Image (tube, one colour):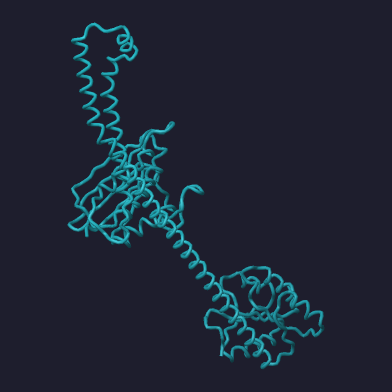
Length: 422
């Protein structure tokens, strides 16, 4: 029974002796083997240049032109054919010839004149070895591929866990800082109004003294001149107003930090996506300002009438952070950098958030790999390649939504977040 299951596979016989060819062909054909015949080494080498290769070669040693030894040497030099087992057929019985053939890569010898049963036995043994070798190679390749895939999956999962743990830790830290900042800022904000009233009352009393006490002792008059009381009375309310605005700004930042770092890892809740977007923009404010020769990045918000949605707010804020930070990177070398944020109802059950930039866009190669874990176009140390991978997981697996994008090289990129309301 033939071990060659593929009908296109065959045994190649190379011999210039018609009698030998007839005996070998008949012996192998009776056993159901597919065979091909060539009468010299050059023809055999030409055949082997084709895509179909034999499972085994029976090669005569003594042939005109290129002899069997040289034919064997050339076959073994070719990476495409070097694994094909070769059995020499020869009437030579000296040890030196056999050693030479084996050293060139042959696996066996068949002595002339042929004994049919011996030929069949050797052919079947080496085909069996060939079959087992190929099977083991395939198993090994499959195992290596599985190991590579499993290793990559484990590495990705590990880095994702580290990334998520870092985000959770950052959230706790930010929430703690925001809480600690909120108390003294609240104190300052609450005290500015009465301080403003005190200053107004003191100013009123000084004006009354100035009106009715026109004659001052020299010491008081000199002190008032040094103090520049008129400037102080005019500027002090302005200072208090500036302090009030700054305190309110810090309070807004503190609130944004608290909103951004919501520790809602176990339960969903109804939240406003606009609050999450605004909190994220507040945190990224320093990256939007002009710097050196780069102009400020213009943020254009076109918020639609959308309801609060049931979600893990902290995780969605992480998605907003990643998409907006990427958009900022994309427009940093643009002359008039802009980022648009749109929100609208897609239908009665779904809201859409679109983040659009007029940046450099992405090539086809980058677009095809964009959501692959560990893939990044940023320099070493500037990105993990997990931001978009985790963002897609958060949107699609955690919220049952859809994260997609369109990008055109040199024109910009648009990300779509389709999120269910419930």
